[in-house]
Amino acid sequence: MEEFKNILYPVALTDLSPRVAPSVATLAGQLDARVHLIHVLRPFGWYVDNFVAELSEPESRESTSDSQSQVNSIIKLFSEPKSKRVASDFESQVQIQAKQKLEAFKEQYFSDTNIADAVVISGTRHKLILEYAKSKGIDLIIMGAETSLGKVMFGSVVEKVSKLATVPVVIVKYGQNE
Image 1 (tube, rainbow, N blue to C red):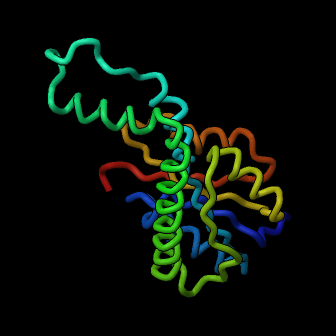
Image 2: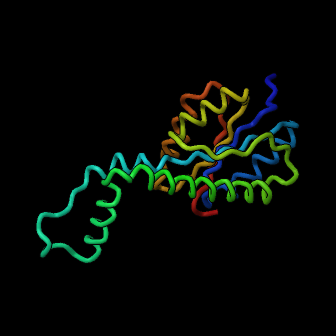
């Protein structure tokens, strides 16, 4: 029988996370396993590269609404060369706040659990989850998924991790009508 001593719980820090945490903590306790918490942020520069550069200002000022003018100002700000620095500064602030939220989450839901690590990293979510699992010798991944109509196929991250992982993946499902 396989021993599961290192459990990875990729925490989304959404409303679903507190509903999945008790299952992770209980299983870790029963297996006498260590839990690794990871939260993966998408780099803000990805949004700048993929969306902002593709947008342009409308040709006529007469047809521009106030809200469109505000959007155009933001687009112009991020289309300038300093956009990478602004994105990096913003991403750093988001990363600090995410680390604080993850620490608070860990204290609230895993105070009696053996936590090996709690990290916030930035990049492609499913790839970094799988890389972390490999690099830390993870034997089990536990992820949460909503079963609402809009999330019928779990979610792209959960789906990709469950298909590509080389270790067992447990999916804790929750529906809208709990």
